[in-house]
Image 1 (cartoon, one colour):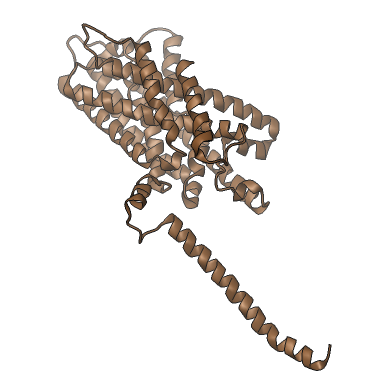
Image 2 (cartoon, helix red, strand yellow; image 1 turned 180 degrees about the vertical axis):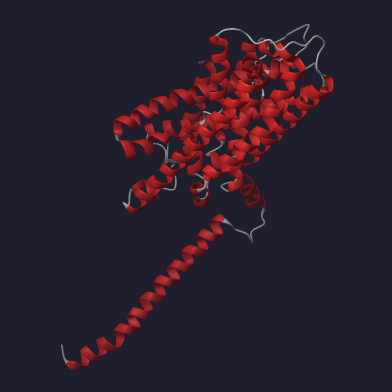
Length: 387
């Protein structure tokens, strides 16, 4: 190579380097604006975009609504019964105690999830680049504790979520049973369970917890209305004549109330899948959203428990579902309908992690939603109904 060639190469090197730098910067800018357009699309006001924005959650308030809907729905209707079994002091003490434990547990779960996501990213794990991949509880445990503990977690979580899904179907059937004429119950609770299960199949069409924004909002409005209705009705109409506040004797009854409180704050098995589909900054602070949800649950549930037990006393012992304490009315009917819709949303929040678990086991997690993933979800929901 002669001197002129060397000089030409030396002269063109900075220009070539500048061209490469500009090309890289241009590519980064295109990628940035493409992502911004994909996620925000603020300038597009087409009907389809508006509909997508309604369903596309992922914000901090979406996390708060989902956790609030899950927490309040489980405890709202059972709290008067719990108060009648344990009394005011014990009930409030253990509600506070187990809520603090649940906050700490949720914090640990979210911390592990964030660390898991960070480690698979720096390791260039293929899962970190898969836009369809949603982390599950057992994925996180397997990563930190080994495969055996991961399998154990998978079995425990699957059983817990299965029980919670079935509980939502039964609870909804129990609510709707109240809407029938007391002198002529046309449909049995078993028949209503099958009808409710068929309606709940529609939940299968929601891809992930990120699309639950309007449904979580509906569930939150349902629990808020029901809490207001029960509190006001209890205060205005109560206490009933010759009300008594006798507690059932024996450790078993006290233990039943204690287990019910633990159940109300034991929904951690569905946390990881919900948190992982949120925006990245929301995933990192998902435990904070849970704290706000717990505080909200105190406001709407303890007021119902205290007021209903004050109004009905020992009658609450025979009513695990608080709706059965109140006389038929338009306000109660509205509450029953709203809480039935809420239970449908809660069913979806508990079933969604199971959807992801089954899809991973069948290696279709990254497949198109229609028809394979949807078909598997529908079959799983049918299994819940007939179990």
